[in-house]
Image 1 (cartoon, one colour):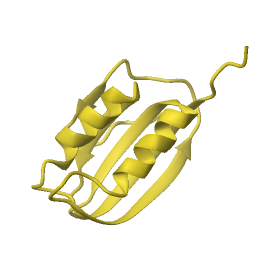
Image 2 (image 1 turned 45 degrees about the vertical axis):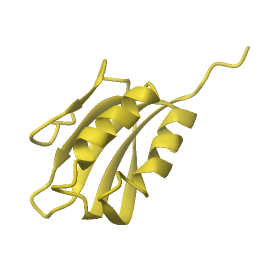
Image 3 (image 1 turned 120 degrees about the vertical axis):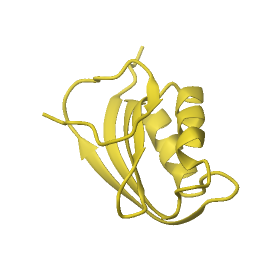
Image 4 (image 1 turned 120 degrees about the horizontal axis):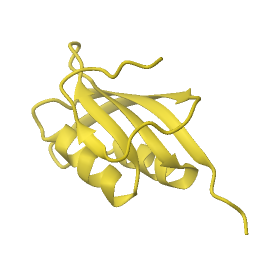
Length: 101
């Protein structure tokens, strides 16, 4: 039986993504996909998140990020691959960036 490949990625979502319930929707969508991590607003008006999970689940969340919730207007999504082991047990809404070591 083939084991699923774990993936860690950082995303920055640009557009009208603050003030439209984007972070709460990300928490809901990530949790439904069994993706762990955290999401927060950035000072430049974008939203950033760290996502950890099975490769297919993170890819599915990445596709959803391009659409976002109903009131969002996503202009661009940047993805950065991260190495290392999973660090989160759930997906949470945060008020600042995570410290990556």
